[in-house]
Image (cartoon, rainbow, N blue to C red; front, side, top):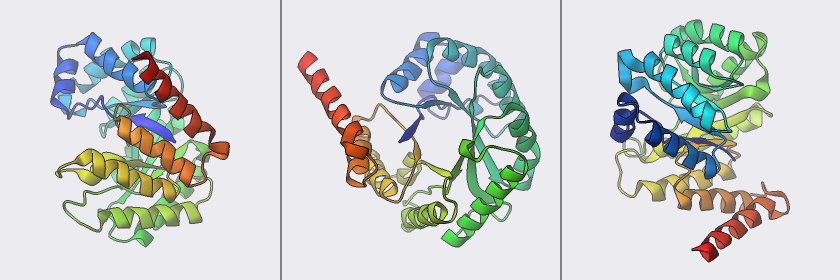
Length: 268
């Protein structure tokens, strides 16, 4: 499971304040804890800073890359901020995200071709949020074909069928799972990703819903997840679900995870 750590999101008040005040200790601590917990990427979302976003990226990206051994996910809808983030990032970043919306393609596709990041592709186009799994598959196929035509390495592409909150639509999780299954079947080799916590937005006991949903998604072939890697229960869910789904050869990851947890308990 490829984990994208979601904690450095400026929509969180404490994070937004830390960005605004240039709180180096807090920002680095949040990032390093996620890396230590197993994150493959650290998502960096400074969009809530609005007109300060580029300025904050110019401060944050060099700071984090000096301290981390994993790349960043540059998470912004602002093409100017995205360009600055990709310029600043050393090595291959993760672009979060491209969609099938014509304006997003127009502004982000040239950046993808020039800077060659990995790319999260949302199943979303100018017609709005898809209401069926067939529509989500259609968007995914169209976007994968476009990226392939433009010379993008498909191994660098993550398709996101979009998770909506079940608080607004109780069928939202089912729609995602159906879409995920169809994308994996019809686009073999393409990785899939999901923003797990979206499913529980506005509801109580969010962590419980998140890890249960993630377990279901893993059983349908999910490759990557945007989540909070400091949630120990969700990490346990990942390793147990992969073991039970036959996605952990010889249970190596599960057994290593259990040994690591046991060692920590003994130390304490």
